[in-house]
Every structure is written in structure tokens, then in C-alpha cells.
Image (cartoon, rainbow, N blue to C red; front, top):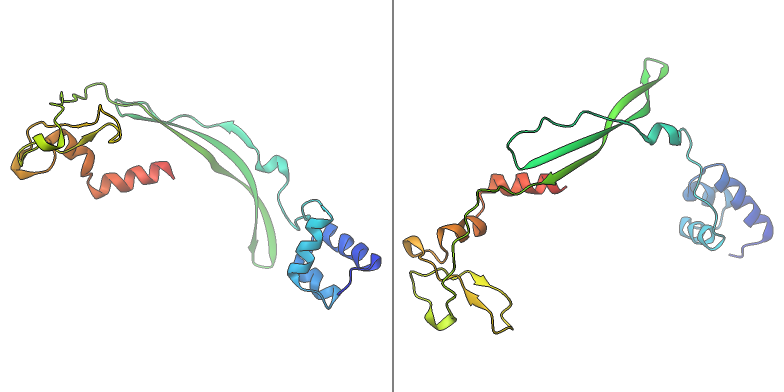
Length: 181
């Protein structure tokens, strides 16, 4: 298939009207959707006009909402609310409504101040026993590498402090993953 000047002009016109690559391919005939997309990129055409889209002013955040109440918790969050125009059908009539949407939620982590970190005994690999913590500290390729070596309860591989780091309850992991996402 050759891209003649006439076909290129028609492609540009249809693209500016907001037709999809599939629709343009169907109207041009003898060309695939991927060929249309490739030609659009080679021509460096601007983004396709969107039919029935919202205006840029409706998508920008309008005002910050009140921040969440601060407590002794370790997380502070703030939200920005945006107003978006939504079109919905009621019977045979299309209605446009403006609705507030939480656009951004920023979460800041503030570590607790009352955490006690045990002093490690700095044991080497050959000095570990069944009752010592085997939590590695540092880079194994350096001379400063060592293991925690504190007392570990009930034949566990880690001391109480490192158990809390290694074994997180499922609920806390899910909650932490939801905060990140």
C-alpha cells in the first residue's frame, strides 16, 4: 500500500476530527490500524481530538480539601479535590453534572520516636549458635559485615526486634501496600 498525497491529507483530516486509527483505516480502505498509527507517528501529528471529552479547566485541581485530623499516628495525609464534569443518561436525556473527585492523596510517614533498637553483639558466621539472632547487618562483601547475635527466643532465627521486621502480619502488609498504591 502506498501513501499518496491524497491519502495522507485525508488521514490528517480524519485524525483532526477525532476518529480512531481503526475508523480511519476502515474509511481509507486497504490499510491496517497499525499502518495508520505508524503514519501518524511519522507525520508527528498532534494528539487526536477527543469527542465529548472534558475541558482542561474541569480536569485541573480547584481547591485543597481539609487535611485529615492529626493524631498521634505515624501517618499524615492531605488531599486535593478536583471538579470533573460527568455526562450521564436519565431516560432519553443526557445530563451533565459536576462532581468533586479526590485527585491526589499524599501520605507522609513519620517514624515513631519511642523505638528501641537493641545493641547487636556483632558476631561472625562461625560464632552463631541456635540461640543467637542471625539477622545480617551490612554488606557481606565488606570487612564490617556481621550478624546481630542477640538472644533469640524459642529457637527462632531472629531476636524479638528482628522478628518484628521479618515477620509482618498479613493485615499490616496489605495496609502498607494500599498506602503506597
